Length: 243
Image 1 (spheres, rainbow, N blue to C red):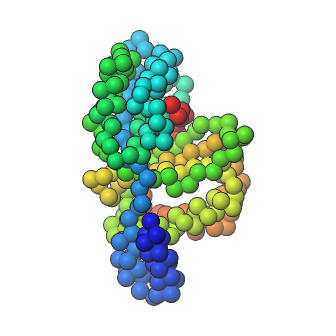
Image 2: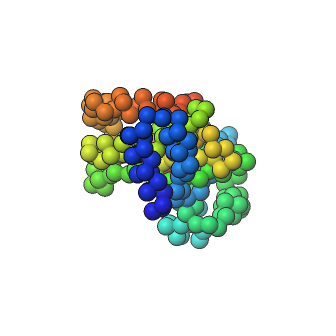
């Protein structure tokens, strides 16, 4: 981590002082994320005759399984689309260890009766991920909204070319103290695509983003730097639950 941090500082200095932008891009491309965990996302559907209440009851019991007792090693989130009729959802299984637990989790789901409640596409690709930012006041944490964006890097760009803009963004979020979090996921076999998840911990998060972030003079510049590096295919709002 120390080597990566020094590389970022050196790259920033070169970017600030050099007139040769192409050389800077090549140097930045050498920077790779220092991942914190691995992650699978499973797209699921409730079975006919099932309900969210039945799903919640199943998951409440399933999380007591021995495999999830060490919450510092594994965690599970469920994402429900923000609409009135919910029959689709996502399961996110996060693994902070080097052990491959995902097959065990899938087998345990089936053994405990999950197949009677819902069906999932378990042929998902593995992602590596890291938590980029998380600020929350537990006393005022009254919301569990998330926005999931699917994005790809433009030709000649990657995480390294984007990192300096990202540092500026995180620094600005720290100043504004918006109850907000970011997770970044990159597909293990495809470095050109990534998933970005925004977590909003206040009910009036849209108003806070509009009045605090979008009105900040640095926001436009940082947004334009992001658009220079990457483009997002789509974004969807969810309610999420940490199980």
